[in-house]
Amino acid sequence: MEYVLAGYAALPRSSTVSVSACLADLVPAEPDWDDWFPDAAAAARTGHAVYEIGFPAKDVPVLLAEFAAAGAGGLPDRLARAEPPHHFGDGKLLGFEPVGFDCGLCHSWGCLGGLVDDVRHATGIRARDGLIEDEAAAVEAARWLTASGLSDPKVFFWTPAVLIGVPATPLRGTGPG
Image (tube, rainbow, N blue to C red):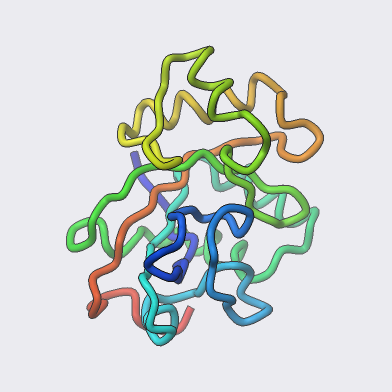
């Protein structure tokens, strides 16, 4: 599956790994950048662990429509560029996290009461520390969450975010976002 770069999360190494500020101690990015940094170098300057975030390219049109309605930060601009993630080859694939957006804010399936268990009971899909290791299972979990409507009114559309650990010295994706 093709992914589009969404940004970079900077997290203390002791934090839960998630793309959602509901679950993780995300280091604040500049206000107009949303919760995530536009490039790996800016995130690395925080001195914390850096994770690259990507969304399936096929889901970007739906996400852009949601962000347009919410007026959300720099994320729509990054998604509209349709740039692939930079660290698939040199980073560590951590897993996939079903996420959705409400008013431009990212929510994880782990922060909306019991959805992880709901998915496990309905589909058998299991997570380790909130992340799904298998891409196909993550796609199925996001599809099931969207179809279930269980997170209404917070999130209507779910997508599997890919999380990739960025090497300590990012070589690519270091330019301005």
